Image: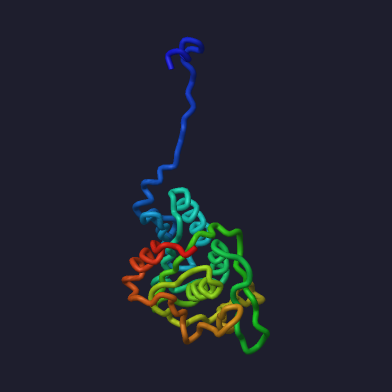
Length: 220
């Protein structure tokens, strides 16, 4: 260092900045989303699919957790009442692609719905569910389970997957009307049945069970 200084004198230095990821061992928040790193597991609580900027906030949380060293993800849907179909499709699009759902109605052919947007991660994913998961949150869990993108752990969801669509009126207002029920692209609807967990445990034990599951040695 003294040799360099003797040749060039004191030079202005450039700041070196690194993201401090230690704080992710405690909960961070983006909107209503809370997330933290538990060991090597990215844990995210998603309380609803109706709040503003849910998909973009979730994407940012995933990216931060990956930077912090997350090797897999646990998405906690317990108690999630659901929300809008477009948010469901955008959140699913963070983890997978393609057509995942259809709406079953009496007045038209089934309408297919795709996951929307670029995938944020292909790392292993576990969803925590319970009997208070409703509507679009059930559709999210059921779709990711049906295409084997996620493992569901906890209790069977509520079985309330009515598809509510907006109809535009002449005065510019909208009427939101339940027009059918949500179902996977192939197979029976979750209406009245709910999404059944791949690993059934009491809801309050679901997080611990998810960590145990993810810590198991992976099959070759």
